[in-house]
Image (cartoon, rainbow, N blue to C red):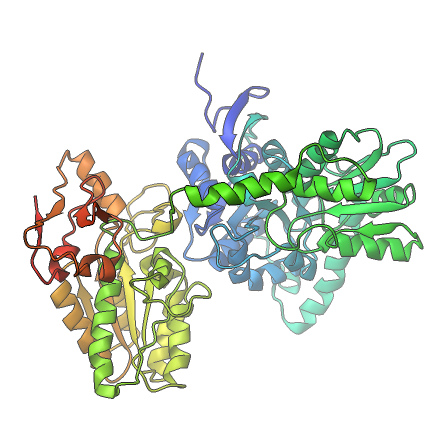
Length: 632
């Protein structure tokens, strides 16, 4: 029997897959012809999955320089009649916000779908954010799956719905959907391959004020038609229980929690349930029918009370007096769970809890200290550790010339190097969003008179670092900008970017260099360093900080994980370092206190190097004052 893969055209067969793979499979089944994305957990695997079979299935797939570009690429393909998608994490939607709002005015020709991967509890993000509010602002309908399989089916249907109404659609996933695994029933893969053709229509596509005034009522009308249709979509399901005193309205993944909670409490035949698959627009007719049948309702949803507020508005408009609960009983932050939903329903129904959740929580609190701590940290041999150490060392030298009370400012950015804020490096004073390291540095330069050294990664530089670099040149900001170039978008899974010389499908392409771009933008001081040549790196960064005007350093060294993989492929032995205990001073601990490398540990009161973790980078040997660290 032929092995099933993500590209197998085997309707009815089942395949165990990751949620993000299922989303990609849904797009494939719909006949997507163009997929664009910028990597960001928890969305990265979607484009990776499509790219892995792109040539086989005649799909164009790209890692775009940022989310705005990714959505614009998809929009253009849709306007040429192709089914197209853009995928990104929730904060990436902020970057794509501008064209997204305009796309809603313009509409879609080929099916156009934006996949946003929201991240309740911010497991891998700088903030929690509820993308449903952006959808509401832009008259953009949302499909929200409750399971991995439904995510696949919704994604496939979203393209058809987009074409039916000539309007962009959003599919909203969350981390527990994208990174869960489940058996998924495969559907048929569309064999249709359209030839793109752009039909010119300046009156609709050129958004001058006059044209926008014409497009807006058309957008509103399309959305109103979608609002009628959602009442009959299979993703919105109403189950009325005879004599029910309580109803549950649950959206997306929260529906799965609610269903399990109702089963735990044995209330399957006593509670009416409305499953919401389209939180925007809500199936108004179903909501009215449900609320009219019960005296009390509980809205179950993660993050903001989006559905709750709209349900209350519908009740008010329909003059329904049903008492509606939501965030008065459930948290407004973080992920929900079956236990949290069970407690809320039990409170409203005076039901006995199936288990004592308080005792479970108490046990968790008691056992948590027994588990080994695993704080986030830069990997052993990470070149960023060397770069950040060099930055701080150089900055402190320069700060002495300013006066004893002067403290340098280190604006940071989004990436592995965000972990530089943790002791002992403490080289990241503020991190807010992609590219803001350089942007904030511009502001600090005109508000303070201290050394300002900003850093960001190579992928982030191409994503959002170039405009603030140009701003620094144009507005004469006296800042030092450091690009930590490890030749990968490492934190999200080592995806290629314009600086790697490879595309999403592995084809060779032009390799852009941050130093060349900086020089072209007018930066006068530009140098490239190897962070593991610590003395040279520190001296060069010091010169950059002392330079009068914007300066740029490219600290280039391959990501330690990629380097180790390549060495294994070449069967090249990694030669670790060890500590000569005869030379080591136990009271010193400079290697631990200055670097924080997880390969350097205390064992029986002695400082030692775990040879199974050491990558042989040699950074610790360069800072040891006793020369006690040597290579084996």
